Picture 1 (tube, rainbow, N blue to C red):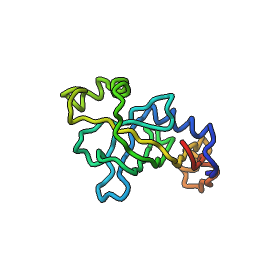
Picture 2 (cartoon, helix red, strand yellow):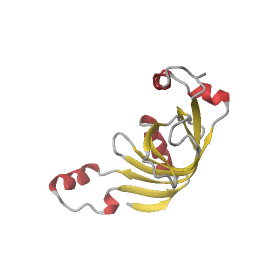
Picture 3 (cartoon, rainbow, N blue to C red):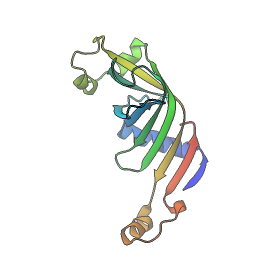
Length: 159
């Protein structure tokens, strides 16, 4: 895997894959609590942030510095995202991201005062793409050595 600054191809691969599998394990930095799965609310025009709905007593609800790990459904993209969690207070964004799927988790609806919306302001991240291809898949099945430059790409920087 080649390490380089986050180029547009890796960034776009990350966001496209994350959109089809928008789940992230979130944890507050310095917390002794385990990370927990959250469903990210994504906005195509906002590559600097992701949003989550949660209860006010959720372990990440207090906000602050946080880190999230992403492993997409097809295991083609892995990422670690660093940023700051803050409460999203824009009612238009809350309305925009509310859906039947969100309501399934919060049956008292979007006006429920115990439900809050968090925004992760992304500061940086690391992304790994897995692209073994036919040759790599053969090596994997037969136990032959897979060289890092045959396995995909790795980039660090702004996602």
